Length: 371
Image (cartoon, rainbow, N blue to C red; front, side, top):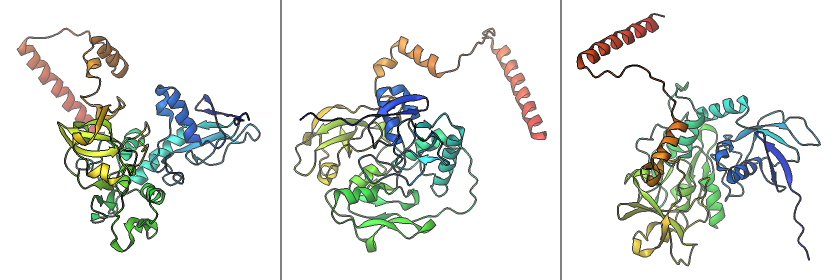
């Protein structure tokens, strides 16, 4: 019997038409555009709580809000409010505005401000730095200033298992770790306790999370709230080198990423896709107990986006040494300067010019202060 394929739905996202299957969300449609053309990756709405491998996730952080300028071909009226793209399904003829709508960008800046109200400035010491989705979100859409004057809420660090430490002060209540535990264990022992600004991730009467897949809550956490106790303060992620590897495991898929510092494996994580989401959950044996290269079959360097801080000084150095590539990179990323001034080498002239420039700078500063 011939298989009947579902009729595709055509929508317009930031002026780009794309066809997707019924039941697809706006977020997934945007990702489909980026997967077809990597240059369009900036169009994809940010996601702090949505996680594709977790079916019930999404709709919590509001980071992915977009404007639906046309609901569908049958009902072309715009939706009255911004909608979360991660849980809103597409309709035939829908027109979505994301980066092209100023209200969306302004709202996103407010969401960043809200998420950072209680979040500490721990980036200099946080193990998640360099891999933190909140860092990326704040860098792209945030503001360098804060209007918040009240004291931030603080929590003591607690161990919620032999391998996992919870730093609730950094938590943004995305629920990812809760959904992960629901999916991979039969008896979840942690969740969100209390309500309102007193809400927190916690275990039932300080019970430890102790199961063969508990380490996966570390991988799904978008910030540094759940950290690997065996890796804490050992190294910065951009000083390590990730390698794909696998082993025969009777508990999980056995496909991981080994993070090297020199010849030493300092941590092991599950492999992630382009959007920073775990492909397959791994067991604690693979994650915490197999930290020797001899335990694994190496597959080669992990593919890391060139824009990622993890790729700094390690990946595609052969291209950086290529003059043509360097010139193209400089032309695309740096502003051209047309400086026709004479090149001065005389030390006395340079000294006088320096004094003159300093006087001008002080004069401008004084004028700005008086005004």
